[in-house]
Length: 213
Image 1: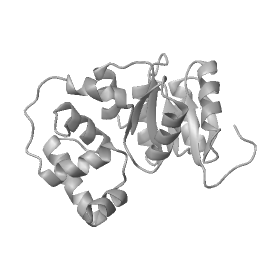
Image 2: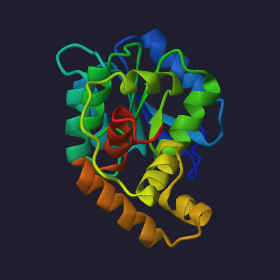
Image 3: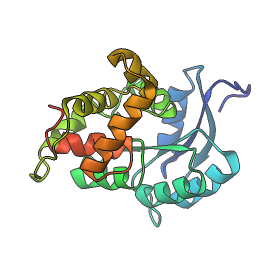
């Protein structure tokens, strides 16, 4: 953790039950002046407690940490600190693990083999509201069980495709030459058709059903 606080930096809490992994992630993140690691937790329970006390912008959370795993911790964190973003960082690539994390409200899912650049980009992206997902995981979602695709409009698919690339609503609006409120309307309609409640789940479901190919 840095000694000098940068008020403009993304404040990150690291949670992993392996100290060496935490230190490695900390070193990579703090090589970017726009990120400040404000705390480290060794369990899901500690991550929930420290999130309440430190109010980080984002929690990087290991998936499997004993009594309270990353999915359970995600739910507790988001209920108590709804402004905090959660990104799962793990070695596990199972479709079910990804979907469990997304359904719990996580803003993204990264593999521990991700590069420093991918990790830093994901932190900044998730902090500004984007969905982050290790690119190599996308093919796994296409192999999920076949589900009848809902009828999404071309514009709704286009908006979700840009969400999957990490763009915010404002950025999508500028790229498509439409207002941010219109982007939100398209997203809300897509959420209803996909039977989801947030951006991350919408992207995962659309990828799973082959709608963004």
